[in-house]
Image (cartoon, rainbow, N blue to C red; front, side):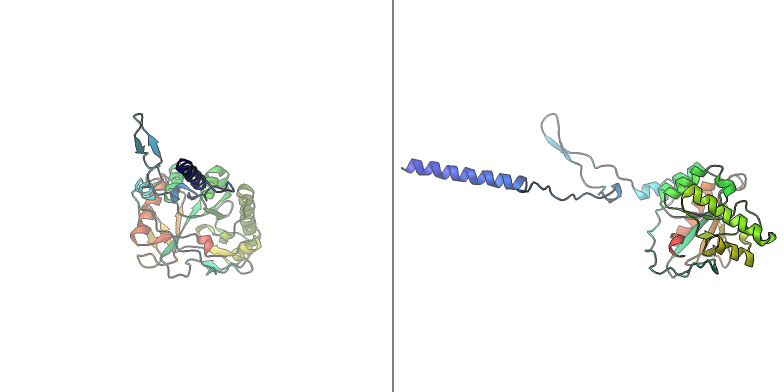
Length: 296
């Protein structure tokens, strides 16, 4: 009798153990545990160990950490530091775009230590500049002429794919003040039409060549669907900026640079010039924000 009792006890214990094992392996519905991984390599922990692996001798070792892109290493390639993440875009844009009466903007009203980098024309198409922009992951606004776009539209398409916007700078880069109203309108509207065809979005901002404009320019800007004329407070030369006022950047300043090559930069490449600009911005404690987020 005692022997039969011991058999029943062992059977009950084995059954309970089996039930516990099945419960630990998965729920009765067959649902797996929620996915905990990040959406990109940037969200992974670079110091986290990889999955365990068996050696040939049967011992277990930890695999090396997965390679994760490192912003500091990418910036260091250019002798720079990563830029600080800019503040969130303001809920209400401080500059109100108005095609009926486009405002002329040189500086964005803000007390945050942000500046805005703009690039004009499009004549130079340095492939290394694409690498610089990928590595630094910062926004610029391009004011382009169709004359230069049509030479190599894919170059600017790559910059657009990184999140940089393409805006209007006329078809042929004339001094608009020397043209009558109809000619100004053709230069401005035709550039918008061609940008929309090439890149899928119509420009919302306009920059007159040389910064020259008159009342007819403002009228044509609005008639061509743009709500603001964008000028600048600083212009980048080769190694330093030329300041409209003082010798320091101020919050909200708009900076002008150009797609120019060594023949115009005394042997310096456009990429080297832009590295110099980024370093000057960092040295003064500023980061770069997206101009489109502040005008609209």
